[in-house]
Image (cartoon, rainbow, N blue to C red; front, side):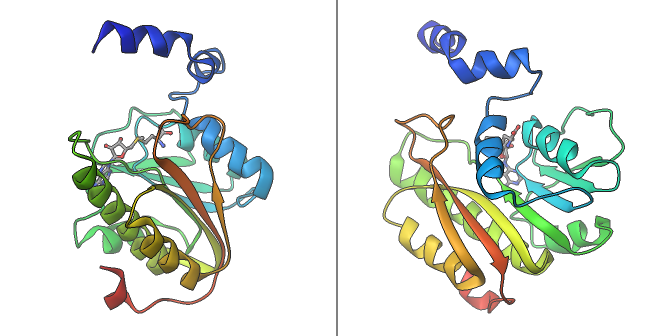
Length: 210
Ligand SMILES: C[S@@+](CC[C@H](N)C(=O)[O-])C[C@H]1O[C@@H](n2cnc3c(N)ncnc32)[C@H](O)[C@@H]1O
């Protein structure tokens, strides 16, 4: 990694805060800010976290849902155990057609919330990175629409760009309320924003979600 990048990271407020508060990633504060404002999970909930490694969103959700809740983290990479019984993890590609069936089998009930912080490996070619990220966000919505209980919530990272509008429209069709958030921990120069859907309405026509 370039020295300049490492130096900037060390000076980063949320990076330092995450180290002090023992979160695995500064990303924890993006979810925490959204949860503080909209409180879309609570004790006893079932939560699925797509693209969950290294696990800071799992730490946040596990704490909120507590012993009676259930959190499942899904990632291409293995997630080091968090040592708590309410957090479970699997290694899986969310783009794999079998992923929905596999995740469903592991849940004790339909999910109260689906989170997705999934990011592709970036190539540096903006159009390619944008398209890949939107594909992952759309796939996350497809997974959410299969696993959420009625009235459940969906919190997803999306890269801004010309494909954003279409992706946002898909989320809007599935939820009663939709919000766009740019948490403080999200770097200003980053194209990422978060879309929150509250009040899952109906199972959309999957054919429009590819
Ligand atoms: C920004 S990180 C997530 C950070 C996480 N929210 C946290 O708080 O620790 C994005 C993750 O998406 C995962 N990812 C990318 N493509 C994926 C795919 N097709 N299926 C599952 N996970 C994927 C990456 O492996 C990476 O761990």
